[in-house]
Length: 173
Image (tube, rainbow, N blue to C red; front, side, top):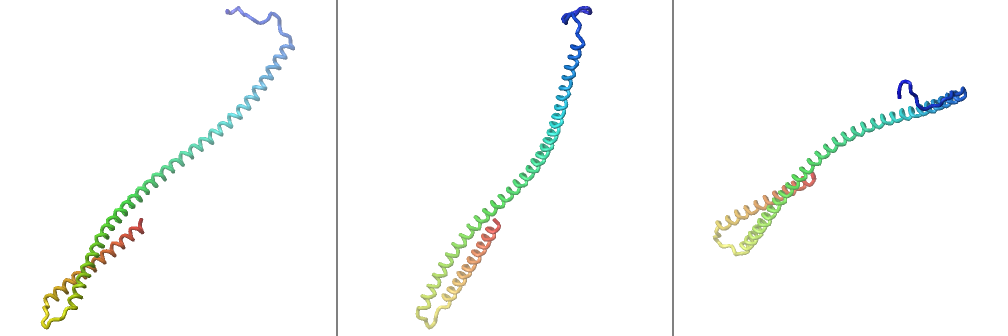
């Protein structure tokens, strides 16, 4: 190719009709291109509006996710506190159950001692009274009976206290 070289084309000149046909064809292609441009511009505007709507939805979803994470953290913290309280209550129940078992055992022993002393008292009461009874034995038996009755009362009080604590803990759990 050079400044004075041209390749292709035809050697004849185009007629006015051919030129007009080419102009009409170019005008038609321009009209079609403008319609396509308008359609694409409308589609682009719709796509931009859709994109903005999706951005807003994403923003709202991120906000909701953040709030959900905060709620989950609070719920997790509350659950941990409740689990700790439940473990403490269970430990207290176990401790009180053990204490109650000991108190009941002490009560059974005290009741057995009381029954034995009452039998001994009944046996002594059935024996004929001597003219000059030995007051030392009687005083010892009375003192022993008082001690056993005191132990029984303490055992019952301890049992009731344990039962009340167990009910209180069961009410809290």
